[in-house]
Length: 449
Image (tube, rainbow, N blue to C red; front, top):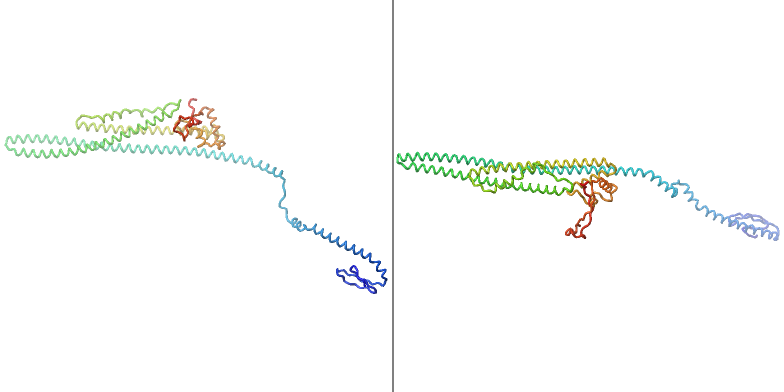
């Protein structure tokens, strides 16, 4: 039996055997000769070679198929999920942004304008509240000053009146004592004459001596009482003079304050503006105090009773003068209140007029605030640098429009712009040195127009 290529060949019988590769190999046995067996060998070898080639081709096909189908699970997983994202081109994004901006931009501008209007309304309300608070503070200060002046004046007047009444009472009591003393003297003289006549008639001088002693005791007692009254009168006179001195000091302080106010008023009037003319009651009694002071310093050579009368008259005149001073002070306060009310009313009218004439944006409010600042200074002018730093910052020009307001007021002729030399704060000792001064732009009210 010959075995080749996995097959078994034998002679005389045929059997089936399991080969090592799992295929069933048929055992064929022939009774032919060896020549016939050798003639089949080449064809069998070719079959085996073809089978091997087919096997290799199948293996290569399987390997290729494995390579091709290796991503199938991943593709299956991807295709099993739903699509969440997709790619969008840059042009589509730009067009979408342009559409959104076209829709949103008008709303943003509308909201911005609304916010600006709200801010301007709040600013105007703030200015109104500031004006009200300023007016209320000034009224409160004036009221406190009037109350203080009234209290001090009334207290001095009441004290002076009480002292005057006390002095009158003491004077009347002294006069009554003088009259009683005169009556006692007259009675004593009469008694002495009667006693002397009786002594001359009876010749008994002892009774006259007893009468003299009684008269001396009464006169000493009356003299003591009169001295006490005189001391009391002297004390009250000194108190009265101290009160008069206080009145004089108060009068001097009032005159000095009025002189300062007049000087400030004259200094605050710029060229072209009329001077302030005080009313007649303010200048009605200018010479009275000089007369009273001269009378007080002069020495009056009169009797004691006349001196008391003069002092009483002087006290009454001083009280009348103090009353007149208080009346003049009340008149001054009244006129100041009137001027303050006129000032407040004028500012309110100016504010309403500016709002009506310039309703757009915030020009009216800025114009009102600028005119208030100019009217609130003595010189009626402000430095542009201070104005920008404190009230209207440059970075908020779009909100307050200060430049446009200045142009409008200058064009109308209400204000004027000038350049002045101003000393620096650090080098204020030498103002004549040009290196230590700088030019400043000043905005002032134009009274010439």
